[in-house]
Length: 344
Ligand SMILES: C[S@@+](CC[C@H](N)C(=O)[O-])C[C@H]1O[C@@H](n2cnc3c(N)ncnc32)[C@H](O)[C@@H]1O
Image 1 (cartoon, helix red, strand yellow):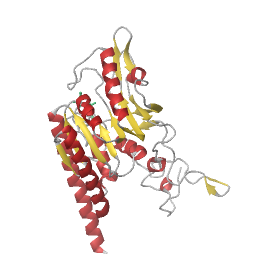
Image 2 (spheres, protein in one colour; image 1 turned 180 degrees about the vertical axis):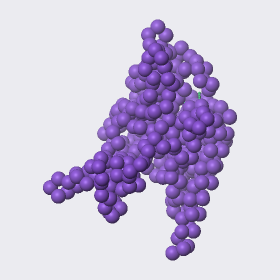
Image 3 (spheres, helix red, strand yellow; image 1 turned 30 degrees about the horizontal axis):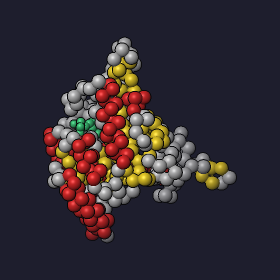
Image 4 (cartoon, protein in one colour; image 1 turned 180 degrees about the horizontal axis):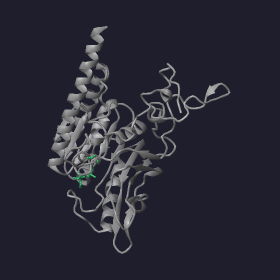
């Protein structure tokens, strides 16, 4: 089916740039970039000043209660240490979190976790989730990404949401399914190809949700009209509760461009959608299990301030190197725009 592409730039849904149905030959599964170009867009000078001022004021308070950070620059604040300990200290300050986006260890024996009994694991998650809840702004949100674990004698691939969904005072707004292509192949059961995101809020009456910022312009019939008016929102459709983002893969010829040395990195594209939906510029976004710093890069790329905790020094170093590289890329973009403007 051929779809005409009108000149109206406000209608993202009928543009070749954004709509895979309109743009022939667009591969939905193409490799992810080092960072999506939307995160590399430069900020205005005024906004950059506001971001640094916000970082400075948070940094002063953080230093008072948590000590010196492992790294702090350009809105990216990282502490090396145990989340429960650091959260306890954070509770003594006046700092409030606008959004928490995280993927904790799944208790499945990865190199960065000591396996606990299932009950201990639930208890530990209960502790840190309560801590996060206490210091979240009233209109704030908590997005929790989890997979599967084994419950001895009961189940092999038990979805972690079944164990955790009501173990904190947060209000569960909904579950989002993250579907991907890559994953382990199995012979005696089906290959798992999805994980879940639990979308929690603190107050169901009042919470940040920026639907227009995350609309999906990939609309099958962008030019369909009813009574002379376009049927679909010019920015696109609601992205629904099933999201398709390629997983960060490893291996010869199939390794994602985004890949770092961290074994459980989530893709920047997915965190970008979460941060856009559930926070506003200059807000504080938190990740208590920061790993390679994906939440931090997406947050700073979108003009939020990031606070991360990570237990392992090697991962802290990976995150900092990755962030520095990201800032270099962002500056290059700024340079390109300045050059283009000087040509006019
Ligand atoms: C699933 S990974 C998070 C990966 C991250 N989302 C990313 O994109 O890189 C969980 C991380 O939690 C860290 N971790 C484990 N226990 C911790 C603790 N008690 N306090 C802080 N970090 C911890 C691990 O070292 C690991 O990097």
